[in-house]
Length: 113
Length: 114
Image 1 (spheres, helix red, strand yellow):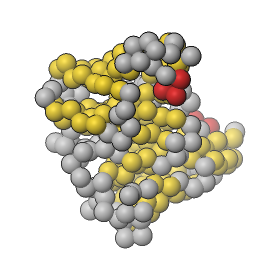
Image 2: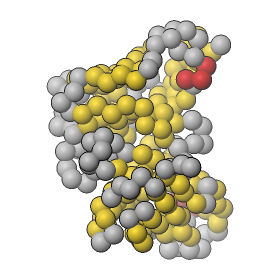
Image 3: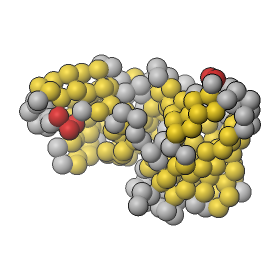
Image 4: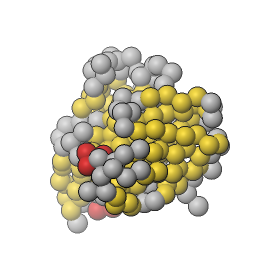
């Protein structure tokens, strides 16, 4: 059974710092991996999608990497800002045709001014 | 306008009541999903649909039912609400032809069952 883990559960950094969020999964057979951002009481905003054949994706200050063989993904945030404060979720899509996502518990990030 | 909308955004109901949560999308996607989010448990799949005639149970479908009224509309019903169905409910869509099954989520419905 696929399990997704995100460590740490919470992280607090000063503004301007570069940071890395970690995501690990137990079964390397995945179709893709998606990173989301969730603000308190709000919906999920898709940040980056990495297909199983890709190693990384970039969007602005965000860079996500994927190492299927080790069951790991990282989300790198450059020059963090207070507006980056949110919960970051990673989710993997198994290769079955259901299309469902299996989510980690998330990392809650606080960027202090 | 948002691509995926959910109504209501907040709802308080009593044990035993029937309640319907609605989801609409303008993305033109065939696939739609219902998830619930609970503190400490993350997001879990309730039901999913590949088209109007294709409805499938997810991992926690007991106590729920769904209806796919059109490609753009997917409703979730709680036939007889119970307190442990208190949660944040999300609708999502995806399409294999665009972005490789990237999923797009609605803003969520916060449901409280007293």
